[in-house]
Length: 165
Image 1 (cartoon, rainbow, N blue to C red):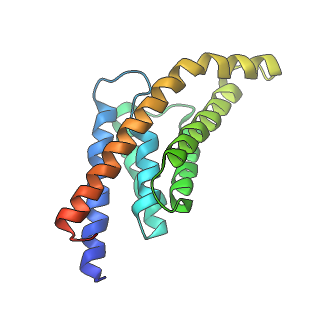
Image 2: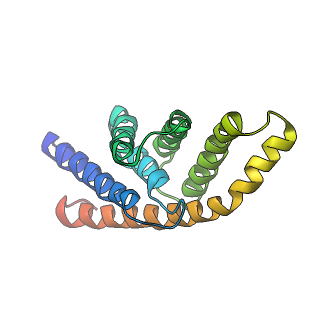
């Protein structure tokens, strides 16, 4: 592999993530966004592990400049980094990796919501997660949709333009 291939590959990965994040900026169903997919995709495809964490996080922060930051943003970014970690540890894209990413993002971010907005009790914790279930359905659907789109799209571009098998 030549360095020019790595540069092209990295630029294509970043381009896929930038295109995906645009869908976060247009009207969509609640939580039907490419957020988790972007982090997982970066972790799966960047051979440079620093880029696997920094690029998706930078893209998320960039979109938040337009959407606004919230009291929960730091927890969302932590969950995002954990999903990137799942991607770096996965050998290849899989249904299990997408499901684990979705579930991890759900558990981490809603724990943060509980800490910020709910009574610090078992009842408050259960209420927080229970009320989040309808949003998880849309997140899960969005994660599978966008992850599939990004993975298959990248594989097509990789085979067609980077001439890899």
